[in-house]
Image (cartoon, rainbow, N blue to C red; front, side, top):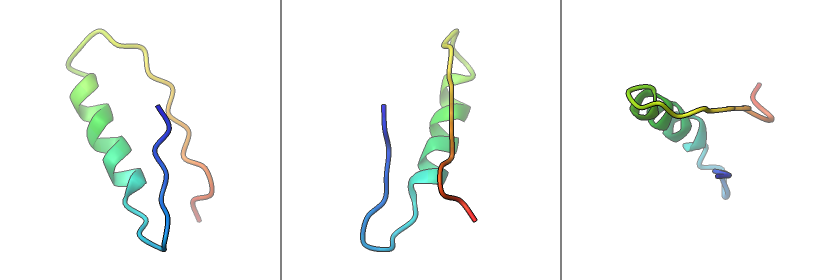
Amino acid sequence: IGIGCTGGNHRSPAIVENLRNYFNKHPVDLNIIHRDLG
């Protein structure tokens, strides 16, 4: 799943972290890469 931002609304890192918290409760293998933060 790729989650990105457009138009200057940078909500995707927060959405990904919320998904990580949700999926950590389940046996799911995740690989999260935050590109272009900074």
